[in-house]
Amino acid sequence: MTLKTALDQGTELLERGHISAPRLTAEVLLSHALGCERSYLYGHPERELREVEWIHYGRYLHERLEGKPTQYITKRQEFHGREFRVTPDVLIPRPETEFVVEIARSVGQEAQRIVDVGCGSGAIAVTLALETGAWVCGADISDAALRVAADNASRLGAAVQFVCSDLLSAVADRSIDLVVSNPPYVPLSDKAGLQREVRDYEPHAALFSGPTGFEIYERLLADAERVLRPGGWLVVELGYNSRDRVLAMMGTRWRETRVEPDLAGIPRVLAARI
Image (cartoon, rainbow, N blue to C red; front, side):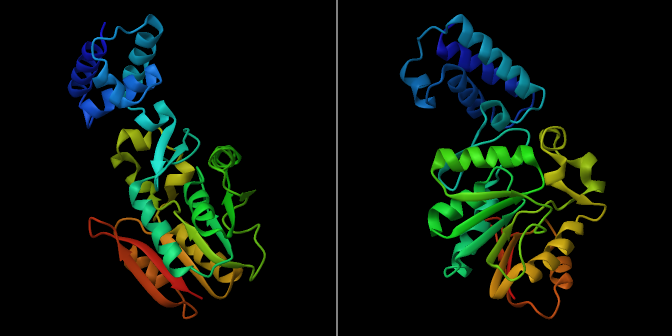
């Protein structure tokens, strides 16, 4: 079977399976099976697949048709221009989370000590370490997630310290200049309505906050008040329709509060100073 035929057949299978972006997905999975760039597929359309390559490609197509996210199949996801390793132990970094990095860099230009709470793959922590030169710590309650994050930091040459911690419980009072987080914010009541790729494959501890979706926000605000130095910033991703409720949780100590929308105009990032 040639690369062109394999690509066409894979695209057709994914279309029939109602997989979004079937052509792109087939390209990604076939290039992953071959260990090549996607451009190679179009530069060598008549190249015959070896048996082992066809076996791998077929398995990847089957996994995707079963609902497994492409990123967990390829174990890769780009974030802020860098390639991160991802596994089912960590949430797949989303493009909208890049706004957290942008706002954090904007408000925390003088920050010397930064903590990423619920660091997952380490996407935010590693990016901030490489782009700010500050001391950065990634905290997560999952040992498995921390191993993925540490591997990403090592591969990308980022000096990040990682700690197993329930939110900021392992961080000393008044020791941090900037706290950043993409916390769990999906209500448990929304579980059934999630895409199967999210509901059945991504780690629930990184998705669900509790019955209301605001439980982690409440705890994180209190923790951030404790660990931030005077003048320090909190930058946190907001869930859909969560802005007003989170703003109402903030006590009188927070100031210079701002909410930034993403490219779709949805309130996405909240920043506030203590």
